[in-house]
Amino acid sequence: MNGFWPKERLKLTFTPYDLILKHTFTLANSSRTVTPVMLVKIQFNGFEGFGEASMPPYLGETQKSAARFLGSLNLGQFTDPFRMDEILEYTDKTAPGNSAAKASVDIALHDLTGKILQQPWYKTWGFTPENTPDTSFTIGIDNEETVMQKVREASPYKILKVKLGGPNDRKMIETIRSVTDKPLCADVNQGWNNKKEALEMIYWLRERGVVFVEQPLPKERKDDHAWLTENSPLPIIADEAVCRLSDIEEAKGTYSGINIKLMKCTGLREAHKMIVTAHANQMKVMIGCMTETSCAVSAAAQLSPRSEWADLDGNLLITNDPFNGVKIVNGKIILNEEPGTGVHFISDFQI
Ligand code: MG
Image (cartoon, rainbow, N blue to C red):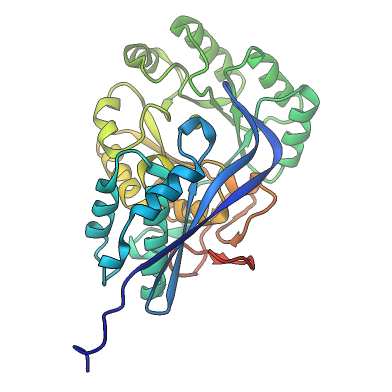
């Protein structure tokens, strides 16, 4: 009989979706109210795994490019979802770039295989769930009144991430300090230009309870970042400068740590390797995210017990999350017992 019936094959489907932001989100170089994503499903043998590609416009991917990439994949050639090396190497080699679209396949495949195994991935990896860090909550650049309101709304979070790199950085910090004395981390998004002024600013920030600074200068300025890391009283973390595993080699000695995001590194499989590699090189790890639904955030949260810091607030910044997943309780990531990436699809449209 077995030889007669056709083998079950992986089936990939996807649909575009727009995330509505609670607040207009302003970074050093851009501003937006909506983030386009692609929601992805892989089916196999009665099981479904969910994935997501989040595509903030400044990163270059769009719903159109993701649809083109995902539409070009032939996952139907695979009859065993556990051959993840094979499936994800094929996906990665199909076209260069498209890292968020690739991540959506990786996340869906992890969710699917975890559901078949009936285990959440943090358990399969052997991580201690109590070791999840507190997540920071991001405060975007805004006017004084809105910043104060956002800080008050962030009362459950024990650490705040402040977007700097605009003309009013000191004002921004002072405004936040008028409301709270919580520890802050500063994400400059490459917004500063002069290394000496940057160092001066970092000393100023340290006196005001900032614990690290992320991507202060343009990512191309490797020597200037290395100089800052050597002279800075606070850790300097790479974000834009380190996307994939192969970028870590160059970041050694240049940065004290890296911000790993699934959308930059093509998903959980590579992110896991990046954590191991960073730690082997005495670099600290932050697990971060874009504006995302609970789907991609819950996937990233599976890795958070092995990360020194987490910035997994993407799903908290939107009003139309179609998934239910890992929760933040009093600022700490709480991993659930649900299999796969720990998410449920709760909307009534089809992916
Ligand atoms: Mg950043």
